[in-house]
Length: 186
Image: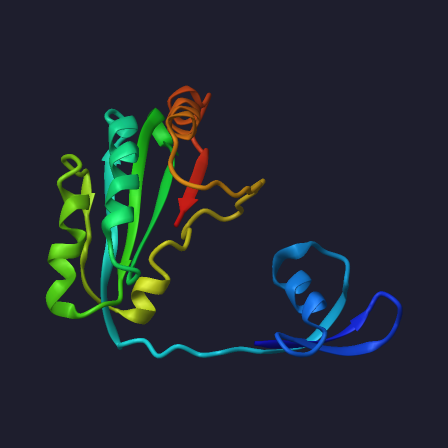
């Protein structure tokens, strides 16, 4: 909701939607190097202690069709459904695609909302269940991989296009070794 910072010209400023609005916009993703932020003011959102979520992991075979269908599923889903896609390779050259799911809507609707994801294929792993928030929040942590060297790069896309699907699945299928991971978040 707001940030206090020392700008590149050495001035202390407060930025919010109503005060230094251009600077506030810039701090929210318009670029970098505007200064050093010394404090943030956040809006908190209440979450229930138990949510519905987990992982659906599939073999990469059929990945193109699953990703194309995911676009339609997300478009029809309520805002309370979060899905990210992780794709990668594991030891012994196993290529996989996983949907990391969190549904924070009415508990009685959870199975109906995530049902279309389960119908995309036969999962290698299905951990979707009512889960305490703190466990669900940490479910994607990489454990037991120390030391872990990594290189990350990101970008923004609008929608799941056939080209995006081909690039992501193709890179996963042709990766030379284990250790490749890609994410697609909505």
